[in-house]
Image (cartoon, rainbow, N blue to C red):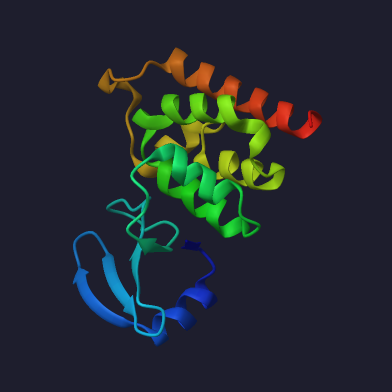
Length: 165
């Protein structure tokens, strides 16, 4: 579902046909002829100054966040958890929902994948992440206190998953 390794991305892109490209958002859509799978290449943490990490993922993704978490956190490939974490790191308005889903299902997820996901989601280091991607906490949607609580809850989930089960 996700590929974050640049060498693997380049290798796979050479096999595919480019369908369309958006130069403003740095998104490129591909079709893999032998597997008949659509792929999207993009930079979710892109700003005016830098692009951030490049991600290659299959299209379309499941609409349900619960299903996306289930798919990415239960597969043995760590790139799925890392890629989903990076993608969702730019959507802090969804972090509350993500943490609730993780709290409800942490025991069903692969321990390492859950750790990779939380690390790349950036909840625990939200201040440095927001500085990098240019997100402003003062927009009024979520308070600083709420972000602190989300960071604390994510550490608890990681601790529970490491020591329990």
